[in-house]
Length: 387
Image (cartoon, rainbow, N blue to C red):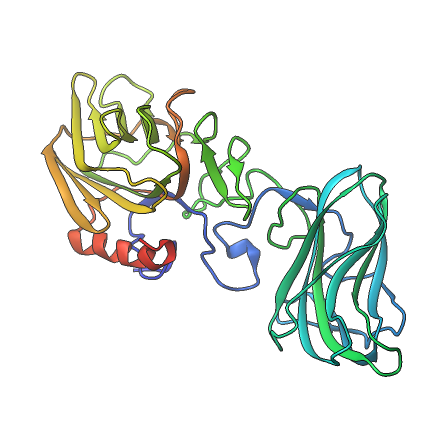
């Protein structure tokens, strides 16, 4: 067993999968399964923080943080201290400005750690952090709409009486993004195919056709959002398993909505899909062998605004569906064969039947997971999604 996708989740014989959470809790974003929403950090040399000047009472110079980035430190400096840098925005519009801070101590009259900008057609504007979180890194961000493109970015601690009030703190990883939400720190640009990583690292996932929520995670709006991949051949296994975590947003409707749809490029043994049907919102797994449809319908309906874990094990001529680690149905089906697999469509089918909500987890295995492995995978996700 391995930790890809969560603690103790099965990955043996995994052919394709994604997980919109962090796979590794470290500072190396290249190892993360979800590096973050496509964006650009317009601050040059943000990793090394070169070119920043001292503000007022100044700072105590740079150091290398545990993230491997360069940071600035302030130790017992008079109020109005920190660093500053002039920035030219690429255009007017809405930006999110952020940096990572760690407060050590301050006097009662000092206003504490802040991101702060001047200019941009809107004058002075600031956002402070939580000064009670001593010695703990926290990200402070603010979203502002600038009407001109020249701003001064201050990373400062300020307020109180000069000569009396003071503060001690650290800062690193400054970021300015032309969007209304923050994304994980990066240097330069994160493209639409670098945002979400296939667990096997063999297939690009393009997120350019999906929306993002206020936390910067992918979401499906029910009208046009989707992921598309192509050419996912899994050979000629006697068994295959499909795993997903899903949430349907809002009031259940009578529309047919797909979690995923997989077509072969040939006309035989051609379709596998999980869908919310039109019949009272019931979930079902369907397989089409070129002649007949095989359907495994779950008595339970999709629960609106609640995450559920679904795993379908298709073993030879039997399909079994599990909901939240518990078997909920089984049926006879035909053999699967995917040597000439075409596109796997996540969140829709052929420009229709779009999912409405979240699909944070999706995996395909070329093996039949055991009931024990199904339960293990569910246990790995249940606390994370409050299932």
